[in-house]
Image 1 (tube, one colour):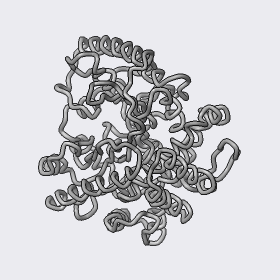
Image 2 (image 1 turned 90 degrees about the vertical axis):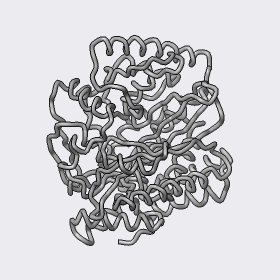
Image 3 (image 1 turned 120 degrees about the horizontal axis):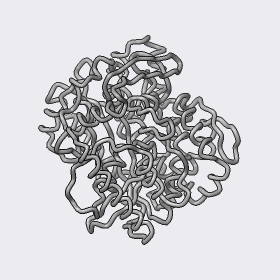
Image 4 (image 1 turned 120 degrees about the vertical axis):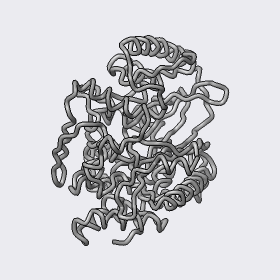
Length: 471
């Protein structure tokens, strides 16, 4: 859904034409898989980070159009809400000092964005859910003025037959509310990692990403509050899933998925065609070789681990895994440490995926994920060779050392490995990820959500990783 569209109104002919194009492009993609027609440049990484614009009081500030006009950077773009933007990276080959390059590039972009925001009497924050955001701010009046978002809202409610969203999240406290548009989604801001992989092990990387989602979300949780209530450690997960729910429990639009890939990632695109109604029928006239309709349709299905098709400078397709489970924040250096952790773990586990798949059935990996999203570093989960175990012990004893090995396997500089993986280690050892820091702040200061947002912003701007933040 990152691509703007020409119109937000559609005829039955638009849907039938899109369906025909989607069928044709799914067949073309199947041919690409069968003939191994994919680019392979070794492991390549990148990211998207969603951020929120706030005013001096720490409240959402819907000025993204003015902000983007002044910034004039094609790598920083609109998001659903007028108080959100998305920062995109350029791809980096994962070797040598790639992680330091990522941090330097993100810091430069972040500094430039903050400078523009401050010129507009605003600030920029990276956080899973802004603690002081209120439901009455999540309205169509605060939607970014782009056709694709208006169309998204209208088509979701068409498929829901006009029925409102019923949000129901039970955690430390419980939240039930009824909402009449898709803007609940805009309360969620994420750090989405991209890993370009070769076709011969793409399915293994996809399955590894699914297996690792649980311990990764426990280590990175940063969204414990919504509308003043303490819910899940990573409340962003149920909020996003329910905010655009279409009622099909087997094939939800935001989903952990239905199974591991058995043979290839083509299975996901076949599933897209067979089980997911067309949400927005993109009117695109380019050749089918660019797979525009297939890629657009895939962009309206938000798997927490999503396969993507891209094209290189020679117009040859490549495969990427988009790992969507990590929230935004808490800081620039935390973000790159989170990226290092995922890239390292994926490369450490990929060679053992078949063994893990036998011992960690998909339904167990899924249960692990939701348990860790709910309870963070206090979770217990099932892990091959360990049985039921504490996620904190698993991270410290097994997974953090594995991430070091995985980064070494792709020849990341030892100094980079130590710098970023040590941040994950110290965060877990101190039991202070973003979610725990926020809860500790509330325990000390009381339920002052605005004060929490402002202090979080001050700590973020210090540049320190979250395990060093004071209360």
